[in-house]
Image 1 (tube, rainbow, N blue to C red):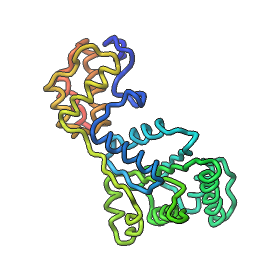
Image 2 (image 1 turned 90 degrees about the horizontal axis):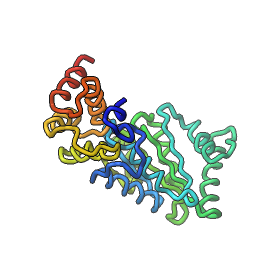
Image 3 (image 1 turned 30 degrees about the vertical axis):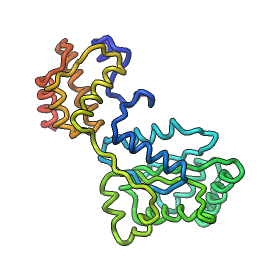
Image 4 (image 1 turned 45 degrees about the horizontal axis):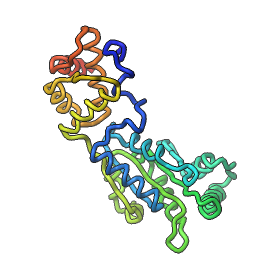
Length: 267
């Protein structure tokens, strides 16, 4: 509907944008660089960010850039995950039938990780998303993964990803042993005003736009409402474009944005 009206190749502001076409803000580049560092050095680290800041996109960028002949990528996103199921889930991703007892599955996973590292020169990369929703016993269990070391050599990379409240949780005395083991910590913030403009223009350019669609005032209004959070920018821009399509207008100005933001206030 949008792409047809504006005569574009595809619809902008969607999740389907290819990794190579992502807008690379400075904070996003920093985030991906730290993820890559943790993978290459087989480190334990933390990435936090507001809802919609681009954490999942950064993980996707990391995954798509990995040489799968050298890395075994495991992504877990289950807020209800319990210690008794943790290693079973990891083994499932490695294609290994888990045994019954947790102690057995833990040894299975440790053996599998070392086997991949020593005999296949392959590093296991474990990404645990939605970390802010994990219970304390699960966070403690994750810490045990960092004990997979011999002579200071770790055979796997481990990254916990979550919303800002995860940092507050990990600052508690109970979880001090976890934070002390973290080699890298990074918070992915929102875009600034100029980056928001560039982000919107980049999305439109990747869709096939040949000329500006959003006025400067419209972009300023969008930034003020979204605080530079990419997912929020996507939502507002999409709604504005739909509004423009219905009205058969090919320029989005502050009036369109105000109309959409007023609609949001009703929910």
